Length: 127
Image 1 (cartoon, rainbow, N blue to C red):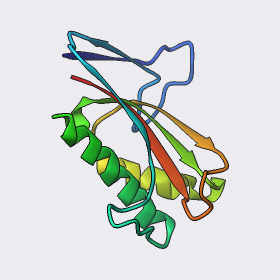
Image 2: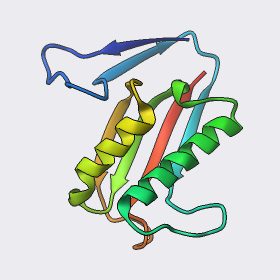
Image 3: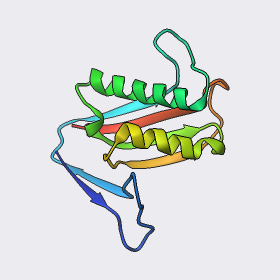
């Protein structure tokens, strides 16, 4: 699989953490991961945004693993935040989880299905 990062000079070029567009070629399968919520397998929702963010990313990774993929296969993700005040902490946790991987991404401030959840993450992977 080949991934080509595209950042047109005619639009804002991101400084860190993501690409404006990704071209993916040579893959044989795609995985669309439904919104992963900050709920553990035991049904527990941790307190605080950082813990919830880490759990939601852990749940994304669990779905990737179940499909025989890793974060290296991630090409796009969308994060829904319950409140704008979580923007910078979300970015910090995402950067830690993804490391040097650059995906296409969108962050949306939205009402989340359950008021206890502070975020939800959906993803697309290719392999």
